Length: 322
Ligand SMILES: NC(=O)c1ccc[n+]([C@@H]2O[C@H](COP(=O)([O-])OP(=O)(O)OC[C@H]3O[C@@H](n4cnc5c(N)ncnc54)[C@H](OP(=O)(O)O)[C@@H]3O)[C@@H](O)[C@H]2O)c1
Image 1 (cartoon, rainbow, N blue to C red):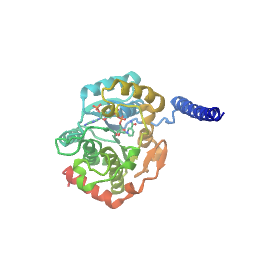
Image 2 (image 1 turned 30 degrees about the vertical axis):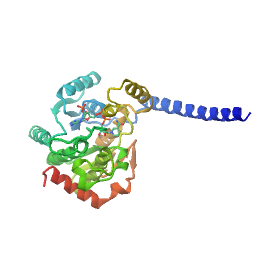
Image 3 (image 1 turned 90 degrees about the vertical axis):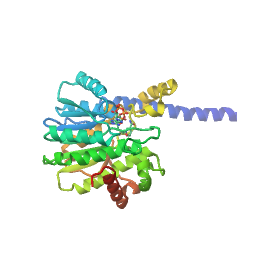
C-alpha cells in the first residue's frame, strides 16, 4: 500500500512537472504571435551591428531593415554576411544593407574597420555590440589577449571608442552592449585579465566587463546625447553553443529538440535590443541593464565603481587608446 501511495504521489509530481513544461512551451510558442515590439521607425538612421550574420545579430538586422534603417552588417566572414543579407532580403525589401568585414579577434582588423566607417559614413545613430563567443578552447589572439575576452569585450571597447566622434555628429545616438546574465558569475581579475583571468570563466568575466565599461562610458558621456545601455537577451537558440556542442550527433540532436521547445527564438531574443535602439521612451535612458522589457538591478560586483574605473584604464592601455 505504501508503495502504491508513493507511486501515486510521485505521479502527481510528474503530472505537475509535465503540465508546467507543456504550459511553458505553449506560452513561449504563442508569444511569437503577440510580439511586444512596437512599430518604431529606423527611417533615416544608420545602425551598425557586430556579428550580424547569424543568431540575435541577424534577427536584429532584419528588424532594423524592416523599419527602414541603413544597416551595417559587421561580420568576420563576408561570405556568411552575404548569405545573411540574402536571408534578410527574403524577409524584407526595406532598408539598406551594407556588408563590412570585421574580425574582433584582431585589433588591427578593428582599427581598419573603424577607420573605414569613419571615412565612409556621415552618421552613426545606433551601435550594437553584439558579436560574441562562448565555450571557446583557451587561446590567445594575435595581440596576445585571451580570445573570449578580446572578442566579447576588448575589441568592442576599442571599436566603440573609435566611433564616438562619428556618433557625436548627430544630437542623439545609442550604444547597446549585448551581455549575458552569466555576468553575475564573473569576477574581474585585473592582474591576469590579458590571459583571461582565473577567478571566473572568461565568458562571465567578459560579459561583466561589458556592463562595467558600458556604465563608465555612460557616465562619461552624460549630457552628450549618446546613451549606453546593456541588454541580456535571455536564453536564445542560436549558434552560440557551437563550441560546446561540437560535432557530436547526440548533443546536436538534443540542442535542436530541447532548444526549439524551451529557448527563445532569435527574433524574440533581439526584441530588447530593438527597443533600446529605437524606442523614443529610451531616448535619455543610459547606464542600465535590460532583460525581457525590464530594467535589472546589478549585483554588487558590477556596481563596484573603483574596479570599473581600473578596468577602463586597463582596457585603454591594452587597446593603445591612451
Ligand atoms: N544565445 C544565447 O542564449 C545568449 C545568451 C546570453 C547572451 N548572448 C549574447 O548574444 C550575443 C549574440 O550571440 P548569439 O547567441 O546570436 O550567438 P551566435 O549565433 O553564435 O552569433 C555570434 C556572432 O558573433 C560573431 N563572431 C564570433 N567571433 C567573431 C569575431 N572574432 N569577429 C567578428 N564576429 C565574430 C559570429 O560570427 P561567425 O558566425 O562568423 O562566427 C556570429 O555572427 C553574444 O554577445 C552572446 O554572448 C546570447
